[in-house]
Image (cartoon, rainbow, N blue to C red; front, side):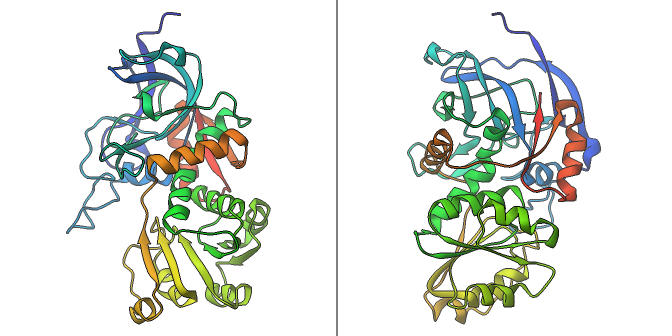
Length: 349
């Protein structure tokens, strides 16, 4: 079947509010050697979409600077890291048997080859993403999910949220039987952390707001602390012997207040700063107890491959909170920013 020459897309023309998202008609990208062209079935939203649009990442030495995830962006930029769809065409050197397969794209741009490479860029930020009818990606980062029991919308929720969650769990060396604290548990990464930690056999103590606690409990949390109260005392009551691993997308005061909750040799893994990036803590609680604070940005290729295996078996069941048409990307981002939902918001081109 012949491909169209142009496609609908939504892109940002600069940093700013939802008004910088513009609808556009642009050429369908042509897959280069080693790439595939994917027809987008669903693309999930992430906080990275908001922060990239706002330029909220700062730069080394200038935390208030407007910047993308890894530095200045080239505009206009088509957003959207999390894509599920079907392979529509392949570039030179790629197996034509991929055409028609249902796939998920690993959106990371890595610093080199190998299973433990570090992400240094992101589709939708450092290269065009999935707020469009078609997107290209390297063939080795396109995972065949044809046999997965998950829907296209569920598959689209996986790359950033569940990839980040699995990266945190792997870097935190979470083991079966350990007690884990999950902050921001009702968000996309938070729900993913609850589900994947529970699947690993951990005891999960989660932190969420009162109206969302039941949904977090249904996702697999053994206990949910209401962030409107004294979170530290609630966690102490739920885990009187302490926690082994903190999985934190909130940071701010929680990091400093929460470190004393760690058992000997505990690990506190940080992958977000929803409550603030300036953190203070008593360093004695770190070195006297052989504790570790670990930064975790997304996933490695090995983490992502493991995630895809979980999804093929249906071992994780992502929650889709709402779906919007592509033309309503700005409205979808505004809904994401309100944080009234549990799970993920997706666009359907």
